[in-house]
Image 1 (cartoon, rainbow, N blue to C red):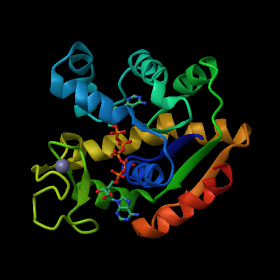
Image 2: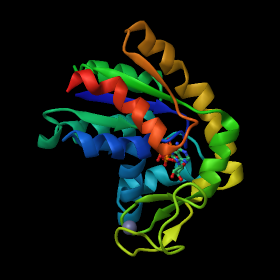
Image 3: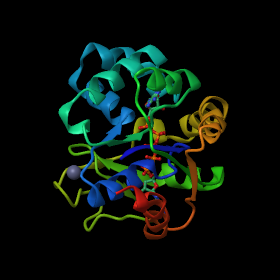
Image 4: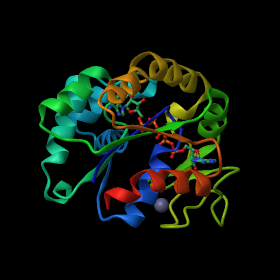
Length: 212
Ligand code: AP5
Ligand code: ZN
């Protein structure tokens, strides 16, 4: 099963990717997470990506395409994968086509911009394991502490108000055209993502149940 999760920043792509992984034995691949890991480890890729990410801009296509090419060549992608946050531009989508990868379905999680701002400004992530929480919608058992690994919960630098606005602008300008791109290939499926996590998961899993 080869899937793409499309949607604005904070639409719930990472949350739904985790749910799909609990039901199917395929890896979730988030370019955002890969870049954040590179940043933490201080490697060259991280250094090159930092300023773009902090400002809410997209990292250059060449860098991200290379990351995905490497990741998809790994053994665990043999039976499928979920791409979360890639492609984000038409150039990236065309690069994926050129890699000869046949995507089964593109799930577009639709959430209004006002909801996006609430979700991102309330998001907290675990500094150690990357697990995602929300101050209202997904609280940890102990405030500020990760349920999974007891790590400290922090706010992502790009979840600050000015950066959220820029990320939304970039999404509408550069990523939204991908909907028409995949609609033309007849593999675009829209999921209304403004309900709670459980309802959004139900709708998301319904889109792929016949693929298993
Ligand atoms: P990335 O890490 O991919 O960020 P993003 O797309 O902006 O997506 P997010 O991780 O912010 O949100 P999400 O949709 O996964 O939502 P989540 O499930 O966490 O990218 C960051 C940066 O990296 C980019 O700006 C760019 O610089 C660079 N980058 C990455 N990929 C790139 C690419 N391909 N090309 C170029 N640059 C790239 O949910 C959000 C919050 O809402 C959470 O708190 C969650 O608990 C809560 N929530 C989720 N669902 C619900 C629900 N149904 N109801 C209530 N709350 C919910
Ligand atoms: Zn953790």
